Image (cartoon, rainbow, N blue to C red; front, side, top):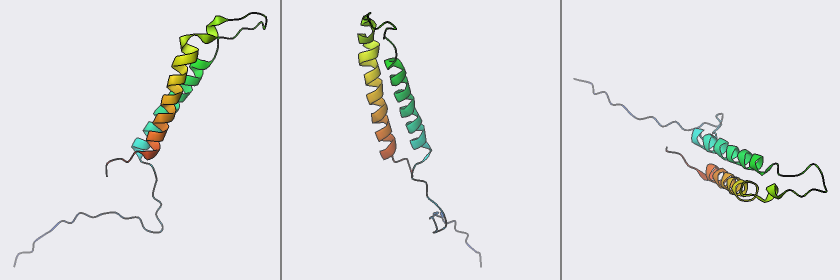
Length: 90
């Protein structure tokens, strides 16, 4: 009589002693991308002021300080929300 060898795919289910991580590797990568966008946005928002309070500097109202930094900060928050809800392949 020949024995048949069958291979079963084992599914690993967490026991009571094992902890399940809520995020996967992809989630953490997306989180770091969002943090990088936020940091870049806040760095671009810096500057443009004047050391002398009697002198007005028009540079603080340029594209970089008003528009670009705001877009990057909002994009960073959107990426953070996506990172929280992202479900990787299982």
